[in-house]
Image 1 (cartoon, rainbow, N blue to C red):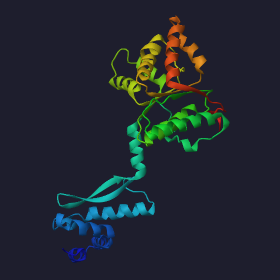
Image 2 (cartoon, rainbow, N blue to C red; image 1 turned 135 degrees about the vertical axis):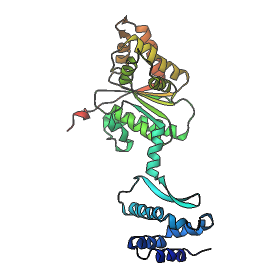
Image 3 (tube, rainbow, N blue to C red; image 1 turned 90 degrees about the vertical axis):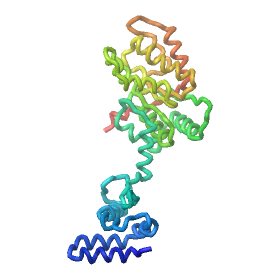
Image 4 (cartoon, one colour; image 1 turned 180 degrees about the vertical axis):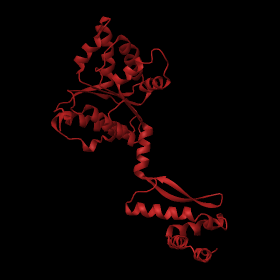
Length: 306
């Protein structure tokens, strides 16, 4: 086995008149991780591997030292590792724990037309005032059941209350917590979804079709702002009704937020431009009541806080 110091000394003699290269060679020889890599993989490396790949080795040292010093790196959220490719050392960047968590959340969380602030919603930062305590306790209980791997049907929540009191934020925090625990969840702003679907009447949009299918089948669905759109018999029966029917039949956990309580929602669902249809409304409400437990939230409108 060759000694790394001897190999590098040969390089130093070869590049003695090039000050920058001499410094690079010296830093490579002093790095413990590179020495360990050399000792473990010397037989896998070509004879000129370190000579031709000094730039990669120096990049490895630089980026590693910047992470240790808390400085900005080439690829924030990733740390360098040395690998071998065709007999030569190569710098490979691996996501750190926080980045892995974020990547997993992106894979597990589907959010459609939701406020940007929801991306960072966190259950631990919620203000635990009296108006939120019941809803927060219910959310934490459901999250605990989900994390434990309970396979029986877990009923969701129907959060109702005035504008700006935090219903959507609470559901966003729940969605982020589920995704962080590798649990699939979809967060859908229902009025925007209906509006976008209406815009595809004269042409097919496969992405929206896929969203509709996912809204029916995803293991955890949050329908945000139910009752805020201009209701039509189509949006009620062909979209909302289909989603709820499938989810009830397959016992899939479903959450709702609305400015209406359940009595108000039933009245809203009964009235379209085609007239008042209480039977159809009652049928939908049976599904909502099966899927979700009603919880009233109260408090001041935080959107108006300066």
